[in-house]
Length: 193
Image (cartoon, rainbow, N blue to C red):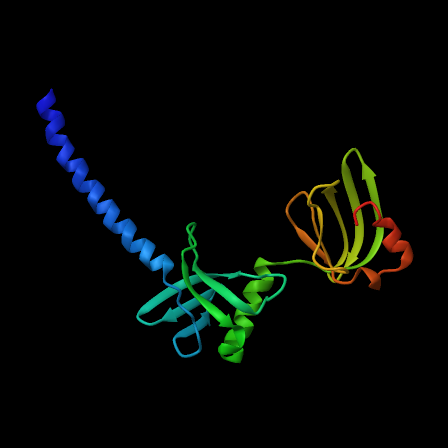
């Protein structure tokens, strides 16, 4: 029996060395920051409405668009990633202006889809019951009803006047300027702000 174990050990060691080498190579790729510009990247729209990328000798049939600073710099430092579950970063767009106008619009479209956040224009009602808040608001997409947890991170301040609200399903809503709401509407939000 011991002889069999000794024969299996070298195979495991070879496998471990291979994995370490692959891991080292992958780590080097991850640590290397690549900036994507109009000179080294070509974005296009697929038939299905997704975003494709050609950069250098690599072509990606579908890529994901992620904002590094979604609330403060939505058009700068945009991460372009592979569209699989690992979402490995391909590169960064330092500034959206570095791309052609039609490519800028394709990126903006993908950002709007990923970071959909209706703007609350009017607060019709907010009721607090059993640890939940039931909202009835008018957004830039029309009337909307949603539920949030009371307390916690349901309503967060982004500035002195700007707020983000996250409902129990993870959907986000924005109040860009609290003082653009009426006094009565602001009174309804006293429990949250």
